[in-house]
Image (tube, rainbow, N blue to C red):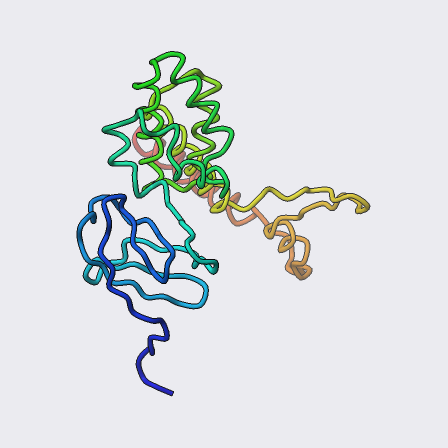
Length: 237
């Protein structure tokens, strides 16, 4: 066996087109828009491909098996869409995100409410800003944040970010602290919990020593009184 990992993928070096896509074996895959016009390295594997800009991974896609297919990641286009939000509703990347379950009905509901309050352009831009949060916040927490913000009619990206972080914090606390146990499980009688101190007292060996006597202390008191009386008589004389 080799000491170092052996690369089994096939290397390609396509150039990113003006739609921010690369072509690998007749299929097209998206990459971040900042790479338009640049050459990138692609390692094609049996089930997926990985795209590198120099030595940094910038995209990863499930491999398309059929010919002339297109696979787009909505996240790759967000920087361009936030500048031109009018292109967002009809974007092919948005439709693929819906089909993949990444753009949920909660996203659509929040988006509709934001457009109603802020207008088409600003409401759509607010949604794109929310999607950009997904680069730093887990998808499930972001969806929870959207749902909570929608119920509160908080239709800004900042409000969604706050609620999403609250959801993440709540999940972290629930996984850190053990779940409370039922003190009386079904089918079992309740048990009395005895403290260690009580148990130790109950298991002490019998004490065979005689009871303490206060007689020596009584004798000391009598001596003190006698000496005190003698001292007062001497002063009187």
